[in-house]
Image (cartoon, rainbow, N blue to C red):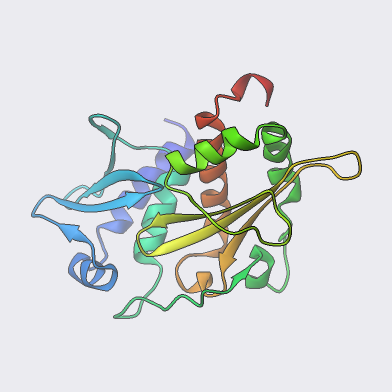
Amino acid sequence: MDNYDLQVDIAKEIFLTYDQEKMLRKFCLNADEQYIHLTYLNTPCRINRKTGGIEEYMGFWQVCRDYSTVMTIYDLLCYHKGETMPALSDQWCTVGTFVVTGVTQTDTFTGKYARCFDGRLEDVKAACKKIGGILQPSMAGADLTCKFQVTPFFPVLLQFWEGDEEFPPKLLLLWDRNSDKFLHFETTFYLQGDLLNRLKKEINHENSC
């Protein structure tokens, strides 16, 4: 078992210390005696209320131990301490808005995906739709602007510009200005990586990225 697996198991135990009934009320989640149900990036998921384990439905239910997926789901459900869900601002900003110091630039990370997706705009659009993305009117001249409901209560916005003779391709993830009320800053990186890896997988581009 590697360190990521260990952290997943630790996170499961920590999740079980939280008030699940409060969580259900706050985020309007469905549940039965055994599971809490939610959708994550258009994938039905359920959390075992006794073990804290997360399962995904991929034609059948299977255990999810992907570190980025698990940590993002737990953080979105557990980070906020209030009795009611925080309000979204409906204003988009970069991840650097949430910190004063430290590493806030993600261009190096997103750049490799932008290069993978370059020249495949229609494939990227189709992949976005497969994981629940809703195409939006273009912002800032982007070739693609797409809104994703990470969970029913938390969105992110993706922008993609194809490259040309003057500029390289560019990919940017934008966050609601109140995102820091929903999750830790570090979790934005887990979520970003999870979303982009799912897009990459959907467009079948692994061999050249």
